[in-house]
Structures are given as structure tokens and as C-alpha cells.
Amino acid sequence: MTYVEGFVLAVPTANKDAFRQHAVDAAPLIREFGATRIVEAWGDDVPDGKVTDFKGAVEAREDETIVFSWFEYPDKAARDAANSKMMSDPRMAEMSMPFDGKRMIMAGFASLLDEGAAGRGQYMDGFVLPVPEGNRQAYADMATKAAVVFQEYGATRVVEAWGDDVPDGKVTDFRRAVKAQDGENVVYSFVEWPSKEVRDAGWQKVMADERMKPDHENMPFDGKRMFWGGFRPLVDTAQN
Image 1 (cartoon, rainbow, N blue to C red):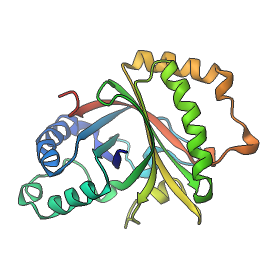
Image 2: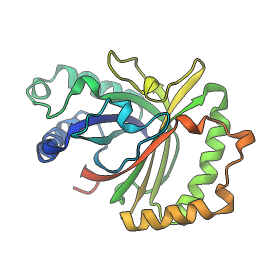
Image 3: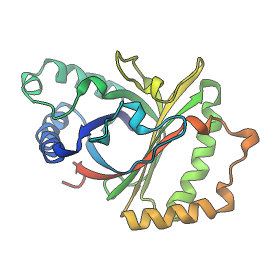
């Protein structure tokens, strides 16, 4: 199944065009190194959370917008080889970054679930959450049932990916972002929709569907530390 390199970063809102150009310039190289798809999505509906949220995950400032991004690879070996090439290729070193890379978080995730067709999304919901290692199968079972409902109400793809290579960062990282406890892993997930309008209508139906009513007694993760947001793609190599 697809191996996902997931990123969250804060970009000065005034640098949106510069960031888009940066992503456009980098995409051919990343594909040359082995990625099958690159998505860079700009924050559109990113709420503040009570415990965790996207902004806190990357210490975003007032004048910054969250970017939710991922690279897809056939497997972990392809991803590892690509990262090695990125680190040694002078073309990557020559690229200037229109954002603070020290606060960017990134990690490798192995797919638990990948339902639907890639490249048909014009709007994305992104999620990050902590799940106890021992609840991996229970979470996968819950996610599989939920994916059916999301697709029934218009989602074109649902991906749930389990933390596989989640490094500790000096300033920010995924584990700190969800306040992960000992024995917990990080899940990186996204749902693709054909438009924001379909997404908004779909969420209303999802929330009203009896199949999605939470079983608080048997939830396989702490929902209070999950965070999510809605994003519009700036670059998607499956469509460009």
C-alpha cells in the first residue's frame, strides 16, 4: 500500500504565491527521486482547538497560514531512497524556502487504509491524532467503517496512515503536536473531496448518520487530542 511522507508547516500568508512557486519548482525533482504524487494544500478552514490544533503544532504566528502536505511513494524503500537523493542533490540545496523550516514537522507513515482514487480531490480534510500502539487494529476497523460513510456522502478518497518513522524535532514534531503519551503512535489521515461545497454538505450528513455516532466507552484513541482542518490544493501532481 501507499507510503506517505506527511508534512505540516506554517507559511507567511503574504508568501502564498512564493510558496506555490517553490512547490511547483520542487515537484519535478521529488518525482524524479521516486514520489508518485506530491500535494501541497493551503489552509482554508483550520479551527483553533481546546487542547491541540494545527497552529499549535507548528507554533504558527498571526500572519501565517497552515500548509498540509504529503508525498506518496510505492513503499518505504522508495521513500528512503528518495530522501537520500534529496539530501545529496545540489538542486534541492539551491532552493530557497519562503517559510521557517525549523518549525515544519514531517514523518513517514505506512497506510492502514487507502480507499478511493487519488487525484480527484479539489478539497482536502487533514487529521492528526494519537492512537495507543495496542489499539492499531481497533482503530483500523473503526476507520474502515467510517471510510464507507465518507465515500457514500461524496468523498473521493480516504487515507489513514500509521506512524512508521516519526522523528523527534528540536522545535516541533508530530508527537508533541498531539501531546503523545508513552505507548502511543501518531496517525496522519486525509479525506479528499471534489469541492468544498461537497465537503461541507458531506460533513453535515456524516455527523447526522447513526453509523458515525461515537461509542465513547470504546473509542480507540483520545479524540480531545486529535486535530483537523480543511485545505485547498495549491499543487497536486496527480492533476497538474
